[in-house]
Image 1 (cartoon, rainbow, N blue to C red):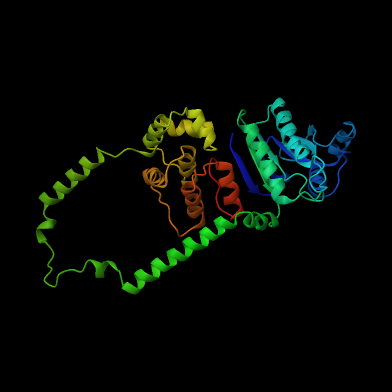
Image 2: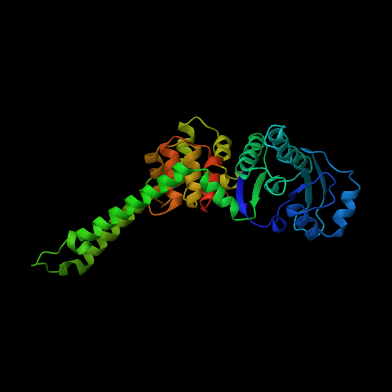
Length: 340
């Protein structure tokens, strides 16, 4: 059930179905529509002629022909007339109708363009929000992996302008991190300075004898036989403590069911950092609890990169909507949370 925003050419997406932002005739046009028709080949136009067009907000399905997908779902988005003519409802309907049509055809992976945000003039920030709302609403009760494919760099810049508080928070954290580093450098806090060896220091020759080495090995064996709680164990414990089911957790974390099954079965499973953070968000952990969970997987949060700062911002503000967080991460060109 994961939902991801990606930068790509939709005609190259290897998914069960791609969605075409078509016009009412379904006979091809500019932008995404024209690109899909060119990539699919003339057989697509022949099939589209038999469909009799499509109403705004509705969807129809064809074969994909020369594309790497199985199907093309054609939907007609609304033209933008200032938002006073039901544009939002019609655009939301495009996503909803396409998703339910895909479900009827057994589609498990689907890729959407940002419908109506090109020549139809829909403001990109609003188009992005409607796409996210419609897709996440569908995924609350259905299993499907959904990609929202953004082709051009402009969308990144628009996204950044939508999150001025987070941009300011990132700048502040970077500045603080730089000040801390400068202070350490100025103070000369090097290992040899903080922990100088006494002038009379002499190496302990006895440390090379067999008995101390054997004792050290015994201590290591004992420590390894009493490992601390693993990431998997802590995750499962937290799920129980929160009164959640496994499905509640992995869906809220934007995680694939198969991956969650691997984590449950393997006590020593080592997740990626975005996966570990996704579970912390799903469980609505505090910042300290998040750091503890990440530590179990061998990770930490730092003010040296934007991904960590954005995650921290949402946690300290008690905002745990993973799709909103991913939209922010995408806007700042960062890895997304969940199963890639």
